[in-house]
Image 1 (cartoon, protein in one colour):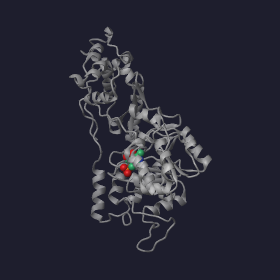
Image 2: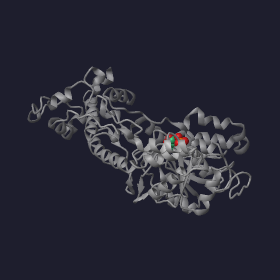
Image 3: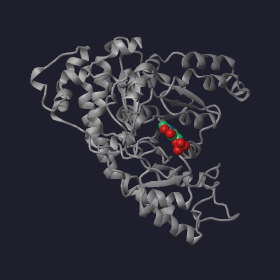
Length: 462
Ligand SMILES: Cc1ncc(COP(=O)(O)O)c(C=O)c1O
């Protein structure tokens, strides 16, 4: 991994970060005892123009690159290349990965798949989700969570979010459950655990399966146990941006022996383990080819040699950042529930309240932060209101299955998720790779935001 260049961090800046809750009120103050310690005074730092207004960026690049790899990956990939055993049925790499990931997560079974979407499709397929069924999900997620439901001609039922945590609001699940509800699909968005106690309680009460979308949540924990191992199944993605990466890839975890076999069969064209040709042995009724290949297995085994150290580093930096950012008025880091003993921090999530930044819009805040050399994004839009989703109400198959009246009610419901609306207006994301940087980079993020706040009135007018 590339090491980060030493930053010109100094005492005055650190004390600046510790003491500038004043700047949270938009004040420009001179504190004489901090001045002159390094040629850069507190007053100077606050007065220093934001990069967007022609000042020097708080951060001049040098964020860690991604993916991280070395000879471990090279050796494994070349080994498989030369062996000619590129398919999981003939090689051992995917099986090695499954065993290693199962051990790391404490799950009873791990079934590798071609992607996170394929993992979700496998779990829903094995559950036999189909036309007429309803599946509960959060609107604040990547569109794949929605797509896998719709590909089965089931009805996606959005439940509003808990603004503070960015997660599905578990207190709103019960009222969305009907006789048709087949599964709850909670997403650990950003890698922060959903409130699993409450999700599992309501699911158990109504005898509904829980499939955890843990595609962003590698190594995250709920009450000391890995997420993805609490529901009937947990689905992971190893797509290139993810904390565990094989370009594309995925896995289903489950503690249920029978369900594991159905999942295995589903991703293997309905065929059981070690069955080839036309000697079919079904334990499900549907299947596809959603298999991972040996090269991806190699990459995952190699990447796993760094995954714990990287996760620790993200956690340490994220906790440090949360402490510092929580002191800035108008910056609200996403809440971790009491049971969340570890987040994956695939994203670093916070909400931005422009009222504390002289009305500076989130769009302009993001532009100013990017100009400071801090990569960031506004994250997801309101998928529930998007034409891509609304169009389902005009789909011939859906009209036949659910009828116009029900789909009209469904559309109305999709347009009434006020907390998600607010979240999509306020959210700010930073990315997992940034949390692998030196601690001093976290200080730069805080410094950039404070600088923007101190100059927010000018930035709002610019
Ligand atoms: C929450 C969530 N679910 C599902 C997926 C789908 O995973 P993949 O891209 O591996 O198919 C992703 C990927 O970004 C995701 O973030």
